[in-house]
Image (cartoon, rainbow, N blue to C red):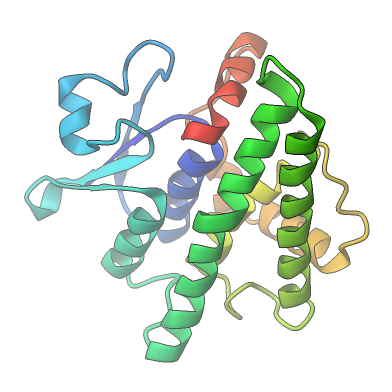
Length: 219
């Protein structure tokens, strides 16, 4: 049994989608990021960085895993799903996973903060993150021109990137000129497990959605 510690952010949704896709049994521990739930001594034992998501594998001696990319790899190996078993295929999937971890997520998160919530609007900074985000979207679009999914077959690479890219409208990025990326976003959104995963945990009020949005970049 997996204990999932999460909140409704893109990085959190990576893991709830992964668990739904693999069918691994899990329990949900929804944390309130504004109420100090990430800084308690109990949670810091699970994730010393005090961020979501994190998991605890109860069947592996209460083994804790933090960092969303590391969790995706762990769950893929545990389930035997969504990560190729051959060395080359595995490397390709992990390369695109790292592309999201090091590029798409950080750039989109910073773009969102400086566009929407930073007290001083700094045009040069806003443009810098917007340009880099669109450049990364172009890289994805080029990859998807010759591949149905980022690593060929649907994998943890797609599960990592999609929860971020799907927010392009919220972040005011126009991807209408990127047909392959558009096709990919829609195809993944239509997967039943993905639809379930992005509702875990649910956001019930407008105020909660605003609070979660403010925390996107750090979680």
